[in-house]
Image 1: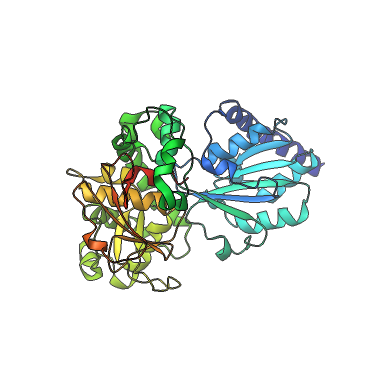
Image 2: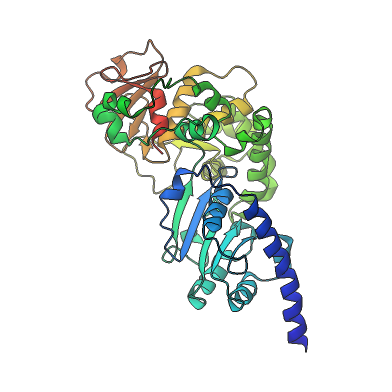
Amino acid sequence: MQKIAKFAQTNVYMNSLFEQSEYLLSNTTLGFKRFLFNEIKWNNRLIGIKGARGTGKTTLSLQWLKQQDLPVTKAAYFSLDDLYFTNHSLKETIAQFYKQGGKMLVLDEVHKYKNWSIEIKNIYDIYTGIKIIFTGSSIIDISRQEGDLSRRAIVYELPGLSYREFLSLKHNVQLPVFSLNDILKDASALKKKLPNNFRPIEYLNEYLQTGYYPFMVEDKETVHHKINQLIRTIVEYDMAELKEFDIRNAKKILQLMYVISQQVPFKPNLVSLAEKTSIHRNTLNNYLHYLEQAKLISLLQPAGKSTAVLQKPEKIYLNNTNLLYALAEQQVDKGNLRETFFLSQLIAVSKITMPKQGDFFVDNKYTFEVGGKDKSIKQIAGIKNAWVVKDDLEFPIGNELPLWMFGCLY
């Protein structure tokens, strides 16, 4: 009798999960899809989607689920930060879902559930008839979880909107994806693929200020306020899931983020940073890497050096230009803005380090100097495979490439 009662009670609670899933699916639109939607190999049985808060992981997974056009008892969305999972195990819940004919599950915010990787591993091995898509914070290192899913799951990472995606979502301007090779081989030929009367930099300033996070479509005026809230949530809640992170240091991390935002890009002096933030020098480097994992900053390492071990970065940038505007106390430096945009667009598709000459060394092969209309080739003269990138150019001229074009890489 006790088992029957427990089964009935579990069904009642699961119904609330199903109702929430139905509500979210009914409010999910299929019009605009992130670039990653078409790159994910959806036929795999276990798929992971990582990314920073606010980049659209939940929407992307719900869009896929909605396209399956199945009843919620067969294809459902569960968020693991739901209060339901404070009293019910994931493994038992999915066992019940499977017995009732369940076939597909989206598990959101997995990093909020203790031992999530072990339970998903067990579920994957036992219930071979269930397909699982799980999403989680960019701070998750799948291979370092106790239940190592790296051999079972194909894991993708979702960055914020590219300039190309922003134009599609906000202004209904449809551009093709350009590979880096396309741009460097013959950027002039790409002009033929652009819409008639397209003005490449018409909306660039809008993107730089508010276009990186998809939630900008809800209310442009509150984007910077939401970004500040997002930073605090990442540091105070998401980073708490890191075993090496002491939540008591959250305030110091926020202070570190603030200090960095007022100086970027800069060559860090760890002694000076430690003094300003009251963070011990020996742990400061670890905290910088936590912020990079959380996609709040980007660390530029010197070209030619191994990145296998944590080392002091050559330069520190904020992760994207929207963060610059959200945290700025004064006018944003234009040079910093250009470089941050370039780095944020390429870092999703390429390996980037700092060369001895020039601003960026990409994929151990290409050197770029980023600047405005007066930028010359002087800094990269004599270097093979080197280009000047300018923010005021609409279309390429010789070895001078337009900055906006690098916003079409995904």
